[in-house]
Image 1 (cartoon, rainbow, N blue to C red):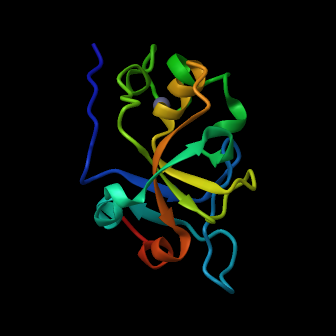
Image 2 (image 1 turned 90 degrees about the horizontal axis):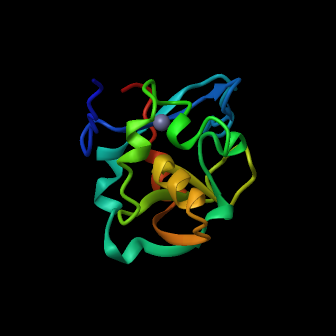
Length: 150
Ligand SMILES: [Zn+2]
């Protein structure tokens, strides 16, 4: 029996890297060579998760990992979850806002880059929801918080 173990809030992170399956999520500093992997730790941006930063955003403007796979290998068949049905999808609480960064690089050329909340995104899309509330952070505010290691 699988157990859901959500490492919130301290240990969750977003990886900024290229992979064949998910595309180019690199977030390079200026004049930096491609191939550099960086991380955004949720604990590093938690001070920005305030009510003043919550906005209503249309889901189609948000880049999230696996977006181009949806509805295949998402939801109960989520590509990042090992068990079936995918527990992180089943337990995703869409009443809690995901975290997106306006103006951050992403493989879809979307206005927003999601760094937390893809299972909630899958669930909202599967329910036909078109827009929702998100913590919207500023690209310039988050860029200095990118880490080389976790
Ligand atoms: Zn998953």
